[in-house]
Image (cartoon, rainbow, N blue to C red; front, side):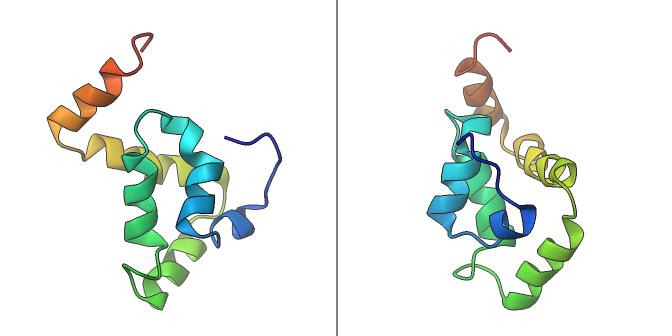
Length: 91
C-alpha cells in the first residue's frame, strides 16, 4: 500500500490496477481478495453503473470499505482461506 493519502471518493473511482496498487498491501500475498471486491462492486467490465453507484453511496468511510472487503475472505472457499493464513504465519 502506498503511503500517500487518497480521498475515499477518488479511491472508489480508480481503475482495477490502481485500486489494487492502493489496497493490495492489506492482503499482500492474496490479491484475489481486493480483486474480487473490485470486480463485484466497482468494475465497469463486470457490473453495471447502478451497482458501482450503489457501492460508492454505501461506502461512506474507510471502515465500511474494509468491512466489505473482509467479507470476501469470510465467504471464500476454505482452501483459499487456509492459503491466506499460511502465507501469513504470524496470524
